[in-house]
Length: 265
Image: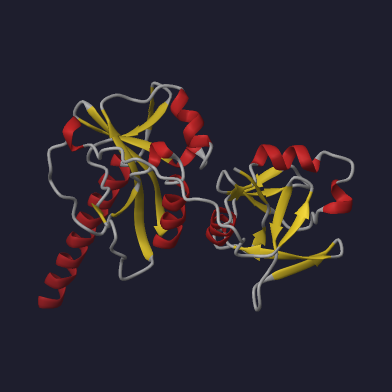
């Protein structure tokens, strides 16, 4: 009799949990509004981590990109497309305001890469990570609560570059250091790096990761095959992998070791 009671209780708890999970998933399903994807206020976004790091890399994380009083104008799409794929962007409606969010990501390391890339743009200078496992603080949002834009001071270019580079036309390819992944082709040794490593290498030497449009243009030129390797994809500034042979972006892990090209700022 007692075992039957425990079984019934366990089934009841499972049903309640399943119902709650279904409700949470439904709240985070986006619907289009004025050309943007909008989720309900009941969609959990967790608390801001700021300078803290979670105990575990795995979980569910959002990158917050601001709070606005109305859905953005079309120009905002260009800012988004410059740093990431727009399908990761949603707005959570909170009364008459909207919280700008990117994600969710299942690994903190991926959210951190996205945040770092976004903060390169002045409009996203206040971007930070939210952890869904942390309870969201019940604060009343207002225009005054929006993070103030801080002046962005551009770092002066270093007199000496941190890495050695291969000059390839108007671009530069960082050379691998000792024990780093590499790929030999076209009589050169090419560095293979994660997206975060690629971004950091280009930025610390006053450059930026090559854009997809630049790479498309270069790969269509006749001398491309004689100069650049093509068997592996390249990281591009839009925060994705790009295969020059197929001419398509690829949904690869942000931790993949791919080829790197830097272009002038």
